[in-house]
Length: 197
Image (cartoon, rainbow, N blue to C red; front, side, top):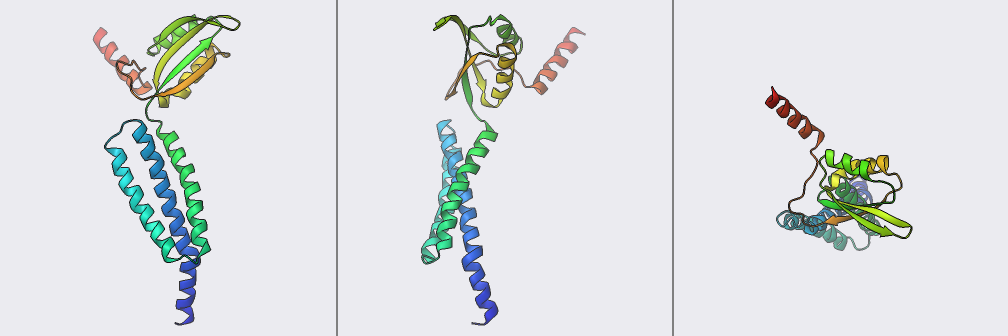
């Protein structure tokens, strides 16, 4: 074997192969994280499809590990790819923000302005009177699309800065009323203006 081929072989063995294994693990663990998210949200067609690609990529990566059992860089790449894949999968899941959440707002302050604003904005609400440690409280329940959580939190902080929030994922919600997105609201407003004219 000439020196150029030997050098290329060593480059592949100690650099290129570990990078490929690392990349494969990032992709398959990210897919696995998304698959679990889709399973939890009853996406019955998408979860098995992702599972197929997850396992195929994993098989390719692990087969390379078994072919190069004496290469410690492959082991490090495999473990590092798993860790990075977990991070990437969680990041993607957060950006997708699929599903719904129930938000419980508990406040000692007068919540009438907050309730009026949320109703006007199109949020479906359930309001209860409650008793806290320090006295009477208002408990406001609403189910929202997960991607609207930051918007709702900002509204709550503006009207009732000291309110206690409790948030949980919802698997299924029927007859839920959601506020329109800004672009949907503009279309609805144009339609209402045209009807009046």
